[in-house]
Length: 399
Image (tube, one colour):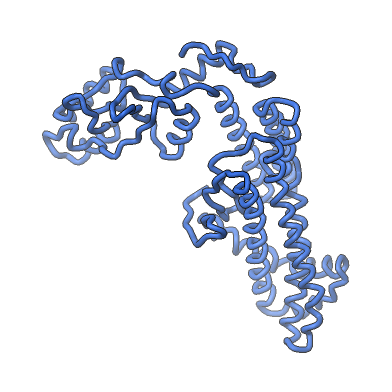
């Protein structure tokens, strides 16, 4: 997703809008407006709605009704994600936000459940809410004729269209999301069912493979039908399925492994003094092939200096600058007993390449992305990652 901003909260869960939502909302409004006569025929056949196509398609009414329907659609999407979120929170999983974006909505969990029953209930909660919204919309459609005499013809016909359209669209949303294309809701249901009698990582691997197959099918069908939205969904499913599979595999691989097991200990670290000049720092980086150094003075950790800091100092053109002038004192630290996956998540979230390992306010080591990848390679070559087909081994090689 691109840049997003907060617009409020629901049940204490932040509600955010991605910038792409502001692009797709008018597109949906235009699509609905442009196809309003076709939709009227479908709704009249399906619901015997009695909508007058001439009334709703005159002037700028199609675009007004298209915009109202698009807003209603995304309200349903928010409620769909809220169903997932409140169910997850009931099981104790914190929810970071619900975000509306290009392809609808997404609820961001800090941690995904590995208990198959919990994942099953969380996954089906969204489609259940969508069906409930569809039923509610249909109920509003049924009672709309009672107000026909108290509102104008245009308002009455517009209400019939919007409520019947949202009724069918929300049910379609529920059905579409139950396609077993991981990580869509149906794919998560599939993983939950697979995880009943096999390791969670293996279930994820199988569900992700099926999800990628659906993504390829959606992509081909989207190309043949010239449907850009379906092509975008295909890309999302393929990338998201692969990403979550990789994350789960990493988590399984590093089960029981702590930062202390993979970090570079302090006695092997290359440290710098705050008085070192930027020119000297650059020379050391080139000679030692390092791009980040803890800064120590009198045995105390006071900062971290990176290649980016040094380059910024060089671009400033100021002479005689030292490490102390450019180092970062807002340090990202982690405890040596922390699980490796938390370090991976933090480095990805903060977009940093290293974490200082601190114990009792004392520097004891440094962990980098390279350390993580090296440890992963050792686990792969040692055969410890046999979890792909069997249970995860509880024994780890010395890293």
